Image (cartoon, rainbow, N blue to C red; front, side):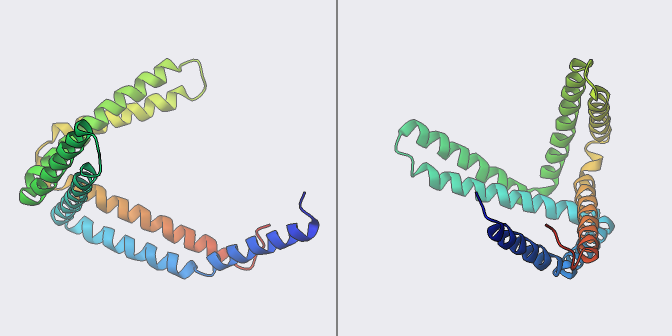
Length: 197
């Protein structure tokens, strides 16, 4: 059982750590402002933002493929070796394809997004109706309906919306992320000097 001296020492360590984080509020604010500015730039150049996102995803897939190929040679059993090798080769080819034809990759990703939203919306609505006697089931149905509608709107405008949709999602995400960092910075600044425990 901790003594009062140990509790006081732990409290002072926690308060010192909290104050150290609070003293960095300016960095949170700077990061938030930079993210908002990047989101604004992306919003003004949706095609470029979409292509940059596709290249980023392609690079991640390509790296994942290389890692899986390297891992395949670490596996001792032949059956598992071929599974990992084929998986890595397919990942690598998908990454290379994203670099070679980013417009077609964008169309594929947009269609994948639409189908994912439609399927997720249907499952959420089904889960909400299945939970109907419980409180809150309506919110689950509403969230599913919203996902379904967004998925159908994206699918209805496909492939025309492929050139700007992913860039718009990136821009909105950057702006919201930036505002959240600004809010955290202002909250940290307001709490400077106050004890946490």
